[in-house]
Length: 171
Image 1 (cartoon, rainbow, N blue to C red):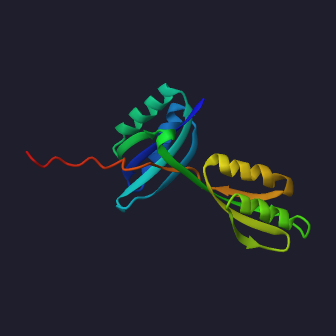
Image 2 (tube, helix red, strand yellow; image 1 turned 30 degrees about the vertical axis):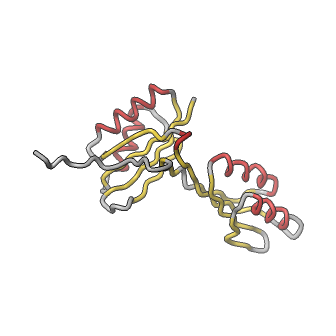
Image 3 (tube, one colour; image 1 turned 180 degrees about the vertical axis):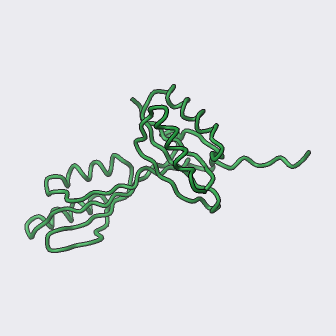
């Protein structure tokens, strides 16, 4: 199954997230990742939804989302023409002998060390999913104590934007 990324502009009000996630559960679609945040207009939020399925599943999702009153605009973001990022915090078990190796791995992945204790290092990493999974693969042998990921955020490259449809006032 292919992973699709759907971007939606929605009304920033109570219940919108519940209605959108309810649509997915009622239809039996699993959400791989869902992130929501205000846009430059505080009355509008952007939802980035990652979902796995074939093209017919994607079409169904876009059609159903478009029917919701709270949804202003919705589109699939093509992997070849969008920027995708995720933030990850990972706490690694360390000691005097493993600390240098963990710091070196974090440096290779251009990650930031955000907390250090005598027995742990907490790393912040930003990047695409493959980069973050690669970092985790190398850190696993040292002992991952905690892991938190934001979920995917994405925007179209270049000047293409998902915009609020403008009102035609020239009647």
